[in-house]
Length: 369
Ligand code: HSE
Image (cartoon, rainbow, N blue to C red; front, side, top):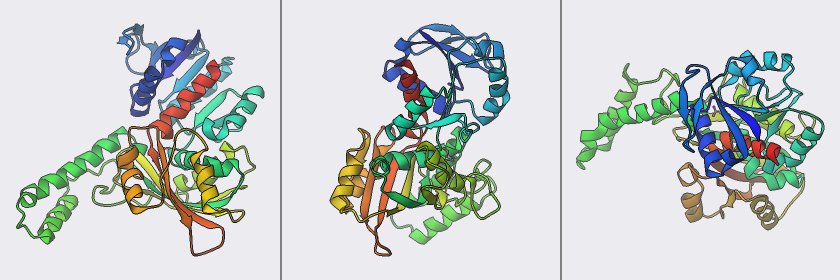
């Protein structure tokens, strides 16, 4: 059995990964080794009831004993150990949720329902680094896999509605804390149907302005608001999150940079764990809507194609409808009136599952085939 080193498994994405691995019986196919940066030597009882002594995630020698390392520990960890690990002569497979190695020429971004062919080609070519993509672009590509496979997409403009979980566990807590403070501020007034709504709005606004309103992580209120910037400021008007859209799309599909143009605005909203994107799609040719629907809905098992009606959209096409599941809902597909061969579509999917943990878990299984 392959020795698989698990790093960062206690974090939010790592915990989702372990839960999925347990659900799918992956632990029966590997010899798992749990690494830690803070509790080396302690005993960990895993979900299968087996006892493990935690190994040292900073020890190159211990990591080098592994056939495969899966890291959900973050980019700083990758930067701290990866080069030394390879420098020690280690020839194993590195599977990583962090972006640190994502754009390197010796890495492939993994999203097998979209790029299994590219993954297989990379394995044949001796590539050993398989990196999870940016969650937002991953979910959009997964939803539109059928259109990419058919080579129909010329460009896309992606306007995102990104959940708190994409920013990290502490950010989820902060959003819930913000919601809770607003809720406390309006609680009594809300319970009385005679309270004027303007007074409720004022109470909510006052709570959001208070110094005690928790904004340390996000830097601004998110509950009852939006944050129109994600990741760093590249100084050219774009955020790094927006930059990732085009470079990662083309890398995932193994196309020369810029082959498919992707741009848009990335916005944080008060959703908890599912990212959505409203996409304007420029197709290369005029395709009847029925054909597009067929291409989208039959691309792979996880697409939930939602007919473009109000009732279906409200019931099935939202973070509330898909969170906690592996479904990627795709809907609002229609022609836009502002150009030819231009279509709108909305995708939404769980940022922790297909947006982060699932592509890594499936890459592990590809290596075990
Ligand atoms: N950068 C993403 C976000 C995380 O902030 O939502 C997933 O790649």
